[in-house]
Length: 423
Image (cartoon, rainbow, N blue to C red; front, side, top):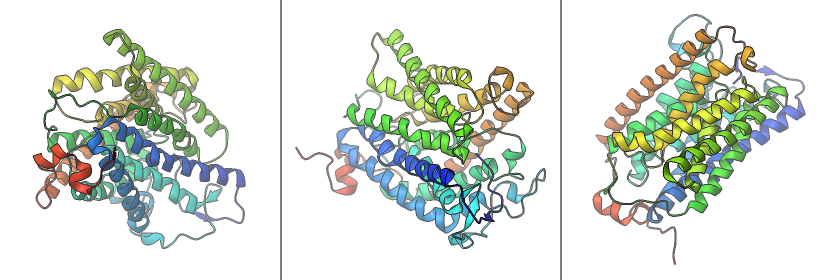
């Protein structure tokens, strides 16, 4: 991801870059609505379908408004940042652009309008808390979910985005961390928060002894397909131009995703005797997640390796590890997003090296891997602690979880007085 140091006033914009960024922005929003909504909606029980879709829609609205009011300023404000100097603004931006007060119609980032960049980054801010929904699906109160999402966006998402992407002076930027499109900012961030939320809320009633199969895998595969298509905006759009970097990012995104889908399917086939539709959809998302931090710096060979590794590792975390540890991450947010993000972040440090077919400025693979591991460790610790504190504080004011009767009836009727199906 490129830095967004002080936007200049442009006399002309590159129409090709502007068109690509407009398209990418729409594609990333398409990932949440309808992609993620359908992907998650199909995996829950029929009585909870609308609750998941409602959460995705509500988060989209709430984060869009919060992004305009203060989020963009906190994430990308550069006042007080100084390369190599650690201060408050190494961790978070400022309030200098509240309500987008300084956004001029003619302002530019790279060679396209800053207004497009604001909206592009808004779509990243939207999907990140929406991903967390899958971890506590079927049991969190709507009001508590909305409050948590807004507070988490404020004190977790915007600082991590600032530290990684705001430019020289940002904590992890100065570490030399490579995160092209959000391995740490989006996926590890959301995956760790999801695990914490699943643990704090506790298991669904009857889990794991009562069967809770997905009610509509057709929705889930359709959602996964939408995520796959939309991810080209997510990754190739992060090049901020219609150029060779965007082209390579598109290629490696496709390669890694295909490799991960096949790897997950193969391991599942070997272990369980049959490949499943849910398995290949999960493998697709694991590959998309893992290639995200690497998309701007690795070549096709590295993408194959990253994709295959994520498919295998995420399979075991979403199945064997989850069963052994006993936590109820309902839709495998931790197993796919956190673990896939970690695999991708670490392997970016390896395969970004030109010696291994990459395009990054990596001359010392060991040093780069250490920087990548440092960003992973910092994100895990920061997100876990803040997510736990937020949930505990919210729980003192608003009940986090529905009661047993509401859970048995289903969140669609209990919280929204509607049904997903009237048959």
